[in-house]
Length: 119
Image (cartoon, rainbow, N blue to C red):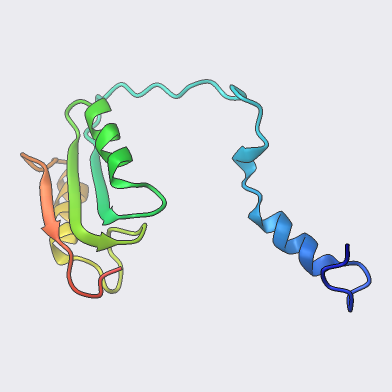
């Protein structure tokens, strides 16, 4: 079936289909050894509440699995990028900057409020 009959090679359809395939969809199960995490380094998990790529429940599960980690949640925040975006969240950026520049995690989990229009 030709979806693009004006193109003899139907190449537009091929490229759209090819781009939609994610590499991990064709990897053999267990093709790489499991990564071990020793929890010796502090981990700050930054998460928007409404992230379709890594949902909040997954970030919370990671937080539970990484003992000693801290969770930085932007309540009402949308999208996959949490930190240092042009329309980002000052509260989240401040907490992450302190962690990155001093090497110290916040004493407790951090909750920031998303601002209107923040993606």
